[in-house]
Length: 109
Length: 115
Image (cartoon, rainbow over the protein chains, first blue to last red):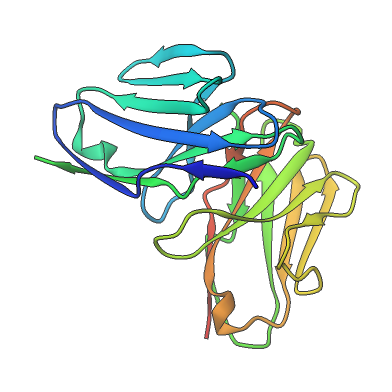
């Protein structure tokens, strides 16, 4: 079956760096997405990786290793507004998104 | 970026009635639209995928006769919850994409409460 694993919850301190991991096993691979979702709101797109390596976008970076079925989202200079759930999703061979359960990130002052 | 709207943003209805939720892509043509449901503190659950002019493809366990989906144009899809029950109370989110391998753009969601 298809499976996306990410930690349920993480806690970090304002100003610090946090890495949220995601491992996947899917039928085919057409890219991996990271979304941010604040409580009570819809998800917003953060990043898309289809090739191995690191994609940097401001304070957020996303890394992919296809051979290991692994990705991480790196958040630097954490701000209180970064408190949210972070969803990892993989597009399979049918171009269907398979969603992880999300990682709730709690930022403490 | 691409914008997707949903209407209404929240709705309260009585048990047994039907509710229609609209999803529109405002500045792009959506070849595919998706409907999700999300219960509190849980992840997104895909309900169905719809392509313009075609019948929706429902996920296992989702009743197609209860959740009617219409995707009549490249910018509009509707979800009708028929004969709503309190257990249908949830956050319904639509998303749309313009091509095969592109990100999905999400609408702001509709919070449905059935009393």
